[in-house]
Amino acid sequence: MENFVFSSRAKTTNLALMGVGLVCLIISYFVDGGEGHHMRFWTNFLHNTVFFLGIGAIAGFALAAFTTAYAGWFVQFKRVWESFSSFLLPGLFLMGVIIVGLWLHSHHLYHWNDEAAVMEDAILTHKSSFLNKYWYTFGTIGFVGLWYFLLGKIRNLSLAEDADDKDSTFSYFRKYKVYAAIFLPIFGFTSAALIWQWIMSIDSHWYSTMFAWYASASLFVAMTALTIMLLIYLKSRGYYPGVNAEHFHDLGKYLFAISIFWTYLWFSQFMLIWYANVGEETIYFRERMDNYPVLFWANLGINFVLPFLILMRNDTKRKMGTLFFASALVFFGHWLDFFNMIKPGARLTLIEMEAHEGGHGVGEAHGEDTAVMGHDQHAEGHDGDETAALAAGEVVSEGDNLEQTAGTDDSFDNDNVHFDASETDSGIPVANEFRGGTPETRSTGTQALATAADRTDADVFEPNKFIQEENVEETEMQGHLEVAGGHSEALHTLGYKSGFTLPGLLEIGIFLGFLGGFLYFVLSQLARYRLVPKHDPYLEESIHHHT
Image 1 (spheres, one colour):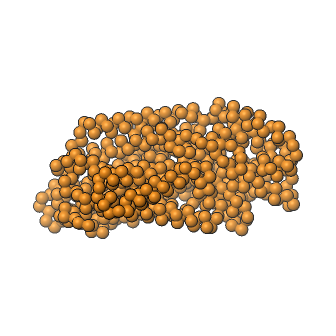
Image 2 (image 1 turned 180 degrees about the vertical axis):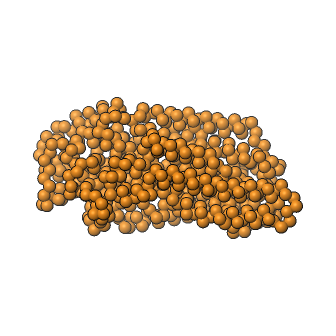
């Protein structure tokens, strides 16, 4: 069949998924009653928006890369990737919701969007020329808009080529190839900047030069997996008779190979950061390994171990059932990978915000009881000797007289947690709250930045050694940590929190809703034009493709 018919049954199924997702998204907005500034809602919205927008963008990248490389094996189903890339427009609209929330301070996904926090933090001040709402807004609109324009030109040329039966010189294809070549370097540079903005800046003190590669590889595997599953579905409905085991074998090889490449990037990023042992970098993995071990190791197991074992054999890439199962597995696995990138950092931001608010305002109703509980549990033990309390790694409460002398510098080396850097008592080293950044003093300007970046300070390599200021009460801190799902013991170990520690039912429902919306849009695009391009110069090569 030349044209795809979007059946009423398929429409109903996808609309039902969208409905489930919308309901779950609304519930996630109210489920915490405002306790966490609706952080669960906003992280879910950002997570799924970036994931599916990224799949559309990386499909356009694959289309442009294979075209520029004079590849022909994919031509039969290139309409699928063209339809994927068309999702950039609704994806940009969804990102617009995040942008509006950024300007109105309706969400607090990004620590760098708090002007007071930036002024108190030398590292955030240093990054503020890039991490700001202007860059985020105009970078997102400008770059994604440019991607959509270039990929739209590519798609229009492909459709015009089908309509012109007299084009014997392949003029459309030559223009198609020019736009593909223009798109590649633009996408290569701008996608990295947007990935830094959208995802990496949630952990605003952390950085990795490999992160953009890592996130892009994850999206490529997810896009390949979704392509395989969609093609298997379409073939089961009688479409794409020319797409055979040879094409699935090639797609399976990409699924296998890029999964290995993703693992290489995962290991290289982890190993180099572990080897350097720089606090500003190690905190990212330390936080996830200590507080999210199931999520952290499941990510590696699902996205590397299982596809490696399943797809290593040649015949598994030609068996539709096995290939579909492996694709579904890694598709969900890389959605989980983005969950791991976003949720832990957002949870730390939530904890810091609760601490800065001092137990008042948003979240007071939910935090009051736990804060009082923390006070009752620890008040007795706090009447003892200050020195004994410090030796035990406890928090010095308000009113304690902590001497600031050269001979007592070592007393700061404890497992306490520091939240508030708003005071002006100069000379006291403060941690970058839970971020694990390099210690800094409360001086400002270039001297503060030099101190913050000093790799010779021993405290740099102890990112979880936090300092508690005199003006922060133990009861207040205990209550905030318990509200956030954790407690104030060594290394700020966090307890289980649904939707953050692991995906809950709401997260799964929202994921299915976004998937239903993505597929509804893609299938609607496929139904508008021929499934197989008629005049592409590499069509015959695709039909007779053999690996």
